Amino acid sequence: MKRVGIYVRVSTDGQSVANQQRELEAVAQRHGWEVMAVFSDHGVSGTKEQRPALTKLLQAVARRDVDVVAAWSVDRLGRSLQQLLGFLGELKAKGVDLYLHQQGVDTGTPAGKALFQMLGVFAEFERSLIVERVNAGLRRARAQGKHLGRPRVGPEVESRIRRELAKGRGIKTTARKVGVGVGTVQRVKAG
Image (cartoon, rainbow, N blue to C red; front, side, top):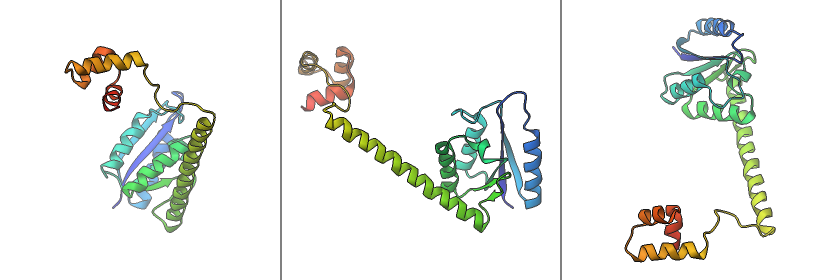
């Protein structure tokens, strides 16, 4: 018997998750799934990064407490492609199936598995595009002569760091005394 975690969400306090929950519990019963828990984000927008019940659901997925995640619709899980792809990646990594009632998606079926794999291809494509855009931006900035990375400290700060180190002070103590980061002290010491 598969163990299911049901996720329901409504955006405003004036709405109710009762219909979503009732339908999904009926689906679980028809499939012979055992409902392990219902995770409910009530009055939480899908655009919000912090959705407590979704976080708890993902923890249950990570612990492998569930074999299937059931949700009313894809838009209950996330509003952005990036949110959704991240969620799907978590499920796929743990071998957890996804059931979406409104879209008729069930990754426990061959057609659902194929859709899941296609979504994985799109996720990889999206990550590649992001990497390419970042690299193009870095190349453009370098071509324009812009300094990339953290700003360097001035020569007067470097000499204060060297004086403190020469007194036998440690890297952390020197960083605290001069008011710079530990990495800056390490770079000056090594340089």
